[in-house]
Image (cartoon, rainbow, N blue to C red; front, side):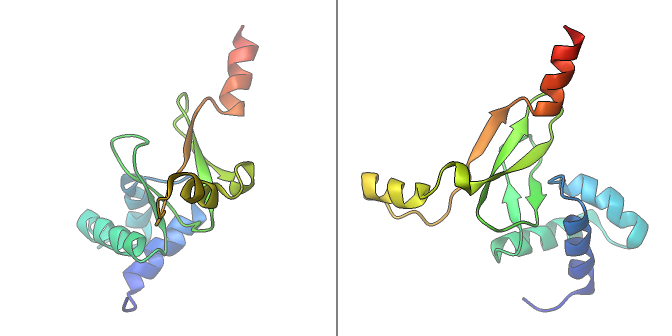
Length: 130
C-alpha cells in the first residue's frame, strides 16, 4: 500500500479514539484536522486498511461498521444499553482456533468473536436505579 498523508491522519485519529468508532464518528473528528477530506475517501481508506490487516473492521454491531486499530488477537464485547464496544483479551478462550480446527477438520482463516450484553458501567447504573 502506497503512502498517503490522508491515510496516516485517518489511522492516527482512529488510534486516538479507542472507542471502536464508526466511519461517521471518525469523519466528524477528521473534518477538524482535514477539512477537505470526503466521507468517500474515508470509507475507501478504512476499507483498504482493513483489507491489508492494518485495522479491523467490525460488522454486526449496528447498521454501521466500527473500526479498531488493535489488530492483536482479541475479542469484542458490545453493550446493548450504551452501544460501546470493549476489547476482551483472547486469554478468556485460549487456543480457540486450534480447538475448532481439531474438532471440525476446518481450516480457520480468520474469525471474530463478539460477546453481547450489558457493560459494567450500565449494569451499575441499573442497580443504582433499583
